[in-house]
Image (cartoon, rainbow, N blue to C red; front, side, top):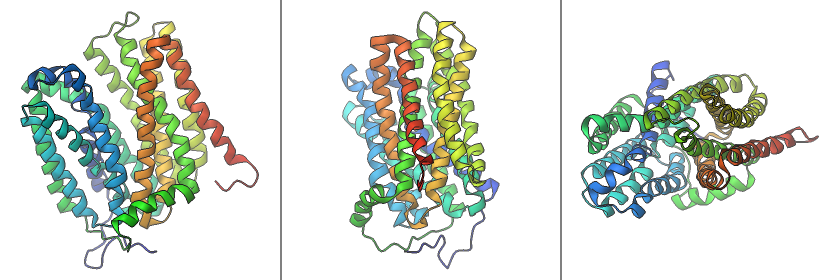
Amino acid sequence: MTDTALPAQDKPVAMTGFLTFVFAIGCGLTAANLYYAQPLIGLIAPDIGLSDTLAGFVVTFTQIGYGLALLLIAPLGDKLENRRLIMVTLVAAAIALAGMAFTRHPVPFLAAAFMIGLTSVGAQLLVPFAAHLAPDHRRGRIIGNIMSGLMLGILLARPLSSWLTSLFGWRAVFEIMAVAMLVLAALLGLLLPKRQPNTKLSYGGILHSLFGLLRTNRILQRRTAYHVPLFCAFSLFWTSVPLLLAGPDFGLTQRGIALFALAGAAGAVAAPIAGRWADRGWGRFTTGLAMTLVALAFPMAWIAAEIHSLPLLVLAGITLDFGVQANLVTGQRALFAQAAEARSRLNGIYIASFFFGGAAGSVLASATYTHGGWTVTTATGLVLPLLSLLFFATEFRRGSTA
């Protein structure tokens, strides 16, 4: 099966620095939709009559929607015209955000939360599209730059929503972001070329092929096995560290915890660096280094708590983020170097797999911190990258085809 990046009626579009920046902003804004509500639940719940029990489901519904979209919508990037598909998801996201802003009742609010998760998949349609436009020798660098934007969008979403709420109220957050999605859709509609994949598969065939790719694609299997434990460790750390920071050892306020998270965002610089290294053929080295950094982050975090050192804890967070981002981008570079006609499906499976790993990390964080404190949490976190390293070591067996 062949793949044509652009149909005959469109002129080829160069992946310039400006267009890369637009892709990065688009991915960051779209992915951020998943996280705006998280710090606002305490304000939203009493305003719309949402019980304490149901309030906890707001994040869950959003994550379920996103997980389903990765498996049911993202693969459509290998079948439907990409520019139109991206614009449709962005407009749908705007409608979902507006629904969350104007609803007055719990059930419609939860439905809107689910739809926000479902429509925020646009970020994972943009990344494979960028891979198609990027030249082979610069693909890793470009994907790394775009993933930096996505990571910053995720990390900045919570403090941004809290800040906007302090100025205008919580409903304004979703109103503003609904408008941002419409502006983004219009901008991408002007800048992106059309791309019509050549696949002859039906939608059912596209979905069925996901199982075949996961069963037969060795690179997908390896990169998934490498990243699931790392993202689980990432989620475990960032779910549990606010509990540590708010406790007696550090005594930070919510604003202080938000600033800590912003400091940790410095790890996002790993994405373009890893992309450049992967372009140079250093993917195996980058993978091993990334896993090692994630493993080192947890002893650092444990020592930081023991000596009550906030700078060392910040450094641990940056080290963790650096390692996770480097491995993520190296994995995407390896996947996008394969058959172009399956890039959206490969990316969807890859992201969905470690997304569920992240959900497991959140569960582990609550369980370990509640029953064993920070020591057990960091010990558990250390085990996860060591598992990745053990599997990575099998690449060096004689006859390995990794």
